[in-house]
Image (cartoon, rainbow, N blue to C red):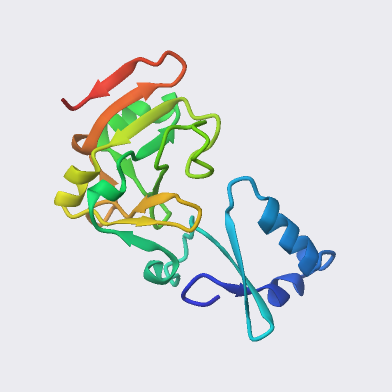
Length: 181
């Protein structure tokens, strides 16, 4: 794998578990993937593929993979989806990147038509982030090729504390269950 996250398609297809597929199959998956999770590129006649975000390997250089977002106005809406069972822990400690490189957000409301990736479809809770406040504290933000907003959070553990949440909404009721106003 290159530092920009690309792997040779031929290397992947030569692996036993992928040997029944060919480049045309890969092209269909990349083209038809609902969340546009992959990028396919050709360089000097060689096909390369990468995931647009979600890398957990530290060898992937996010500056080669993602576009830095340096002003909060470029992310007017930043929403993280989660589940009720995790809310109390998040309320106490904040959002954490855990074993991943980044915390994932979407740049709009779910089911708005403009959001294709960044949140599982069955999330129950929406956490709206105050991007300006998080940036002022030192959080860096990036945008992936499929428009997912990513941050490594703050500190060694990659946390975004609740002080950076604008509000939290229960999707099923539409009720605001937390606010920082």
